[in-house]
Length: 212
Image 1 (spheres, rainbow, N blue to C red):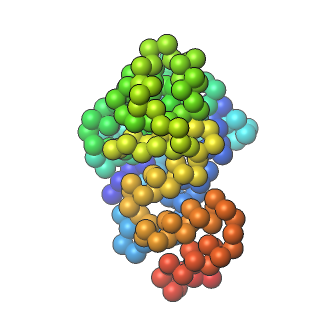
Image 2: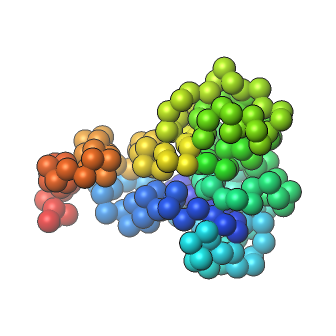
């Protein structure tokens, strides 16, 4: 069983994690015998946080409670508050997790937090632009590893810019291996184009009892 930790913090960008949380929680397109997943909301305290969209969230556990192993996934959403020092502990956990063979996904502002810890100097990555990282992270020296795409996966680190949530989700799901490849391709094609033929293609990849 894999544990998916989603770090929650004030001003969390709701939409950036919408695709990945809905698919991992609902399991609606999972392949037969897909791995069991436990999803936990983790934060620096148990206090309620408020997302950018005004949604109030109460964390399930604290950063110090996280398990660090190759069955652990940590997702770091964007937010306007990543420069607060109280979030350093979860970035330290992200570093430990990468060394342990776990998966870390970071999008938008969370990539700056990784850069400030030096992690983006070691992995191919993306963000909202090289200039964005340089502006908010004086110690960033990973320019040669920057790839100008909406989402980039390198080993067990998956990074994305603010407009890359769909591809970021695809790469996370692919790394977890919980969709059939044909299902994932059709899912991505449908949600990235809106063309109905991909929806029916998606349905055809599922076991007959799951088809509409």
